[in-house]
Image: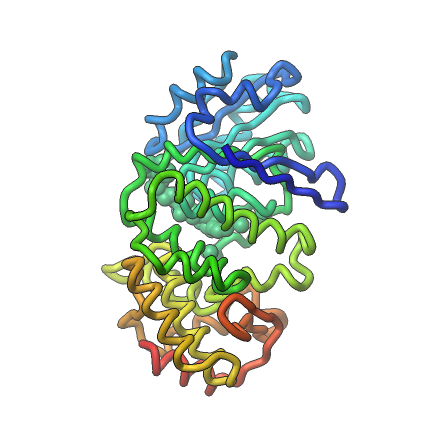
Length: 357
Ligand SMILES: NC(=O)c1ccc[n+]([C@@H]2O[C@H](COP(=O)([O-])OP(=O)(O)OC[C@H]3O[C@@H](n4cnc5c(N)ncnc54)[C@H](O)[C@@H]3O)[C@@H](O)[C@H]2O)c1
Ligand SMILES: [Zn+2]
């Protein structure tokens, strides 16, 4: 088992452990003292039910199970209301615990529900997709979609613990696994060249279970070192957004087509386009760009879309994260080193998109 300590000076109540390994669900009582909680709720979705028994066995106490309908379309205030109603009906109080067992939808929504219930109760994240293991379940961002805008409503609430049991990946569809790999590649690109090169050395499914544990650990370590220094995204944390300004626009547009993309798939295309912007700015060279392309292709990730460039540009301009209409970009200075708050004329974005799509 791997163990990383997260230490954030401010706000308070925000130091916690990320445990990574196998058979952790069954043995969860070794790592968490459940006796200090008045009640325990497990928030999950119906695709994750195969893992519920192991968790319930591990907790060794009665718990309330709230099994939600899976999918991004349910990540909304109605579902959160259902969670709050279940907690209220069952007499949950400030000393209760929520355990989020699922992908990023469950950890984002369960974290939000916990962060607001009685002004915040403890919650544990048990992410069950590769994407949520290396990204959504750590960093403290929680939230729901509102008025068709992704993650518009949310909080920064750090979990009490994140527990990554890699055995949960056994039931994860292949396409979801590959999608998660895109965020791992992004972590290498923005912070660690050797790690990036290692990821390209094999295809995702050729890594052994031990290697996958190490890859998840390294990826979490990179993310944690970034968000520890900037927990609420005032500055350096923005490098995590590499590939996401264009990626989010593509993801969202793809949902209105016959071929909706998974988050990581759209981010892979975003990485290509924002990598190309970095090249146009003279920050990275064509060899580095070619290596990025090869690495994404090697992981079976898409590198282009047939969506219209002008539609993508329009969508980017409507992104809620674009402060006062002024878009700030995260770009690569070299492989393994990203920087943020670049300004770019629309022409550059258009040129980059046109050349990679
Ligand atoms: N908070 C953050 O910092 C952050 C970062 C990245 C992404 N996110 C959010 O995370 C969400 C995407 O996360 P995701 O990709 O995990 O999506 P998800 O939670 O929708 O999971 C993907 C699919 O896999 C299923 N699933 C989950 N675990 C499974 C398992 N072990 N076996 C079989 N099926 C399983 C789910 O039911 C779902 O159908 C988005 O809502 C995104 O906004 C948040
Ligand atoms: Zn992402």
